[in-house]
Image (cartoon, rainbow, N blue to C red; front, side):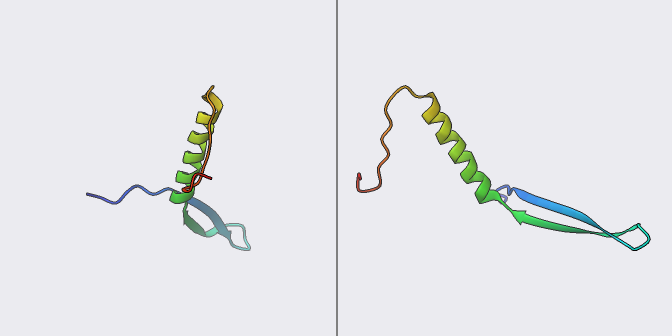
Length: 64
């Protein structure tokens, strides 16, 4: 079985010479898979809070 899909944020910028031509490109890739997953979970929780007519109580593991 293959690896789980990853989400990358990629920024690319040209390096331009003094005569105005593109010499090469610089690319920076950052793995934002965990950040994206957290954002998706927060969006889902937000929808639950917005769409429920019932009371919701949040507690920690010790029921506080």
